[in-house]
Amino acid sequence: MTLEEVKEQIQPIDDKAVSAAQKRWDSIAKPLHSLGKMEDLVMQIAGITGSPDINIKKRALVAMCADNGVVEEGVTQTGQEVTAIVAENFLQGDTSACVMCRQCGTDVFPVDIGMAFDTKVPMDLKVMKGTRNMAKEPAMTREEAVQGIEAGIEMVRRLKAQGYALIATGEMGIGNTTTSSAVASVLLDQPVETMTGRGAGLSSEGLKRKVAAIKKAVDLNRPDPQDPIDVLAKVGGLDIAGMTGVFLGGAAMHIPVVIDGFISCVAALAAQRICPLTRDYMIASHVSKEPAAVLILKALKKEAVIHGDLCLGEGSGAVALFPFMDMGIAVYESMSTFEEIKVEQYEEFT
Image (cartoon, rainbow, N blue to C red):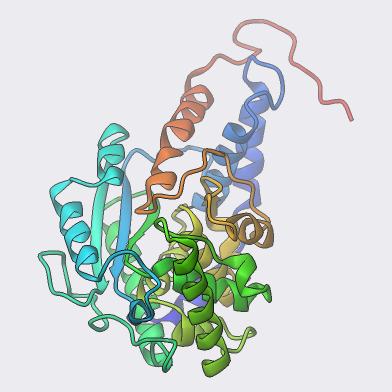
């Protein structure tokens, strides 16, 4: 399925299903709206799927794995070999996100969308062996960026065919907070310094190199802020492009997609800029510790549930939301109504 075909398929969420879910919540024997975001999430999922009957028991974490040529600029603590090591650990179930997935019944699907080294991770959606150094030339061609987006769309298509009903976005790629800061800075028209953090523990000197590399890349490549694909191609990464496709594919195929942290937020922003309706199919999990995360969520008009200073990535924050969602759905599905317990229903006062 092409990007253009997906854009044509994305429609507004189903307001009738949202209203039906709200009616069910209001009938439950408890104070109105007292479960807050638990209620909001159930209603949003109803609108996304087009049904007030909620079933998200089969869920997946899609971890887009890719390398970034900008590591040549000394913007990271480690080299690209670490991307390959962690990516293979996804297959073995030996990452932090994998441990969390086992706790909440979530299957993990790592995708080699652009790693510099070949591994045992599936490579059939691989675009290239790492992007180019954006501080010297565009990270990708436009065609490569679109191919990355379409790889994410294809992952959603495959998962839907297997019956998956909820997708968390994750990533692994040394240097990807640098590319994410670059994309966010351009799309939100914010100073690079505002949008750039220490990533995986950079020193103050390393942070200076990171900011300088981003400024150099933006000045050299002149990405068009009105064209999100141009921004992804020139100063982004394939993991971001892949997750952008997951958000777009989820919207087209009526599957809720959960935003993880900073890098996932940047992909969500790119997807929303490509097709604004995509925003309503996204669920915000947490507020990343990276400085730009709050600004991106604000731009998306999203309120995250978890404020836990998380900044691990891999999809860990997205998966951490699942137990919260499960508890809300359990109340929604199984609790008695006011009518059933013969108690007068609460009234809505304004």
